[in-house]
Image (tube, rainbow, N blue to C red; front, top):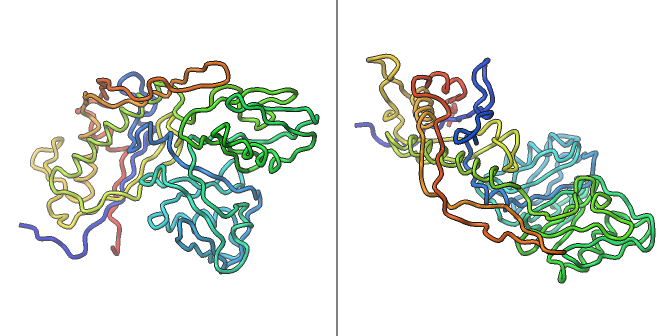
Length: 386
């Protein structure tokens, strides 16, 4: 019988939902086959804490540092440009629980790691230097959701301009900067339950109570002026429709099946370090989903190849087959569904039935006979020297 190994064996796994080598585009499936594969439930997507810097030309001196959630991040490249900063921050994601990315071209974005959704993001200056301000970040904590980013901001033209948030009028003045408008919005947070902060070339708004909020055109000033991406009406984060939410639920049903299969022969001692690419706001399938899985008795990773009688698949090949088996099966279960549908009444809005129990089916993304085709979208590599 295989014995536990003091040094476990780890594998890096990547699922690609889009077509690979002219194979099927599984992300394009519709109906009960839609959704792809995802570990994150739709309600969790709605709770992601995000923020962004305001410097479009990030350049940090090597040796300088910042703190994220009380974890020190030191930059070693000189100068550390945006890509270098993103890399340095993400090397410590498992410690501080934050993912860095490029926001709106050339700005630094930060968001919860996938296993830390909803947890506040706290940033502070490092021991020396001006790295934090060089990224356009202000020290403090951001803990609000749902988040709405407005994009490019336009200053008011008149001293009588206004904008409304949850029915409360915010008075603006000609030439007000984005920072000034942020201050005026935050002065009314006690009445609106909405907070603002600078983000990229514009403004970010978020609820302080975890509820959707109403943004209404004012006098001489519109929601689009406040931010080019804002549209007057209810602001509730993502996903935005019940259909999107149901597809994410299906993606999560498949993920739970994958996790079950990965523990079918021997329970993993580690499953994490999840990284996603593509659409990562819950409105569509992610392009890739990568994770690390580790076993202390990897010799148990052995399964018969149903495509070739008498052949045994081991190690990485076994893991790939286990995942593919999960994806060529259908699953029906009662799920607690997040319904993002928002009802508006005058200057206010609310989700009347945000949580409901529904029977949901996640159909197989391909036929069992095509399991080899599904495997073409899966890569599994043993991590060396670990």
